Image (cartoon, rainbow, N blue to C red; front, side, top):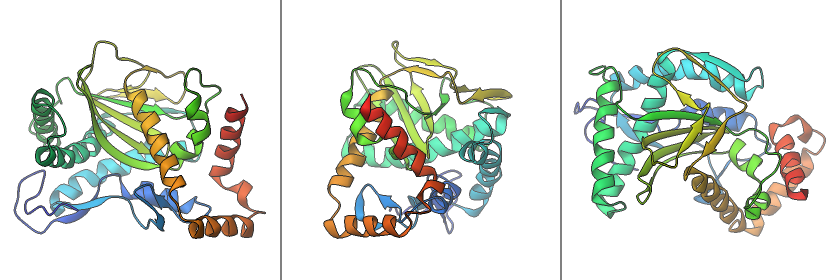
Length: 294
């Protein structure tokens, strides 16, 4: 956990709130609909009580974000998770919320990049510039975020996967629909840099730089009024590699789980055998099994 002395957004030196990187309501929804304990991929043998959080924002800046977070929850997150609709009309509050979400990840990742020289100088300088633009926008000091793009990709049911047979046996439906994470990635050869955030199958990809081979159809969130649908979305992108990496990391975490923890999971499933069909993950298990048979 990073030990910041000043608010990451406004720079005020004061007592900092414990801020979730991915909103707390996502973890709350995950726990509420889980068959058993939530497992963190970093340490699958210890049940996770909460998602990543840091002392990062002052109370005023935390409040600045909370209204937009509530808007996202009521307008898109909960209706999608409850399968109430797949078409969502939105206004500029969604764009603001998505900016605040990716900015939090980018800010913390830049701290890591600074100390560990993770990316090259060109990419690093570009990301610093984007973080500044996003911060100024979040503080209402500018009306846009320049050329930065927000995209939402809904991880809907996969009918088939061609070319990458590895993906079928790592349970993509269960992994993405029951997952929470956020981090920054850089493909320096393609000049594609971004932050990817998974909120139980609602994938936010914020592109700070978009390479020439990137193609995103029916995914972009504009800074104003718009509509997005959880259907007919198409992506041709290096970000597909990140989807694969997430799946492989989940599989590695599962493989590293102790026999004792695996036994606990099996016993829990046996105890709830008559109720499992009522949990969202049951359909994901079926979808993954069908995909594996194709």
